[in-house]
Length: 271
Image (cartoon, rainbow, N blue to C red):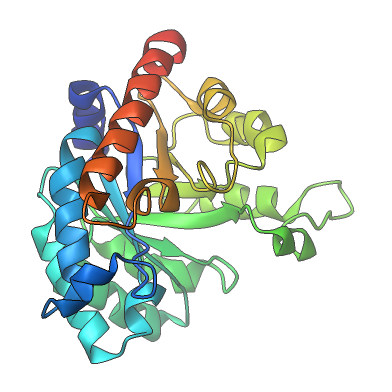
């Protein structure tokens, strides 16, 4: 999917909501456990309920890989089921030496047909380049994350007073442009949004940490939106686990719709 195609979806739906399919077998409604593939059945109903109210789905692969080959099957079926008009994110946080990254790219871009993949930048350019060889596929590079441990390395300052996350962004700008690279910026790092937008005014930001983690959607939107939206704000638990009974899909739809209505206001106000 191209950047313009993604932007057209945002304009059409008046939302920049990304729904996180972080599907935990221990948290899905108990009545689904009788299904042949409980994980896929849960995802299918969530997708059917929310597809009209979001522009992206982010699938955290750990929830599927933890179940072995059955989880991998659920993962493949989920990617296949998502409408092609909706941007898909394989949240796998890959990144290794070049030939290994090439195989990861093949797995997610060819086998799964994902539109994008989250990538860890720690090993440098040659670990990221293989993912950039695919036309109309995206690298979503980890820049500044919401977890408390991010301070261990991402906030390290060099002698010239530059944070490591700033160095990551600055260096990676020589690898690809805004048509092929996005950055992860946690919603709880709101103090750094302005600084990061100055570094990458045109790029899309994938913003986790909204909803259950407490990020402020209005502030994220005010500081993060650009003239082509430039934001995908992810909500996982607040949507998919809005209800743990047979009405779970309808409740997920209700929350997704409410978030979308709020986002429509911010698009008109800040974009």
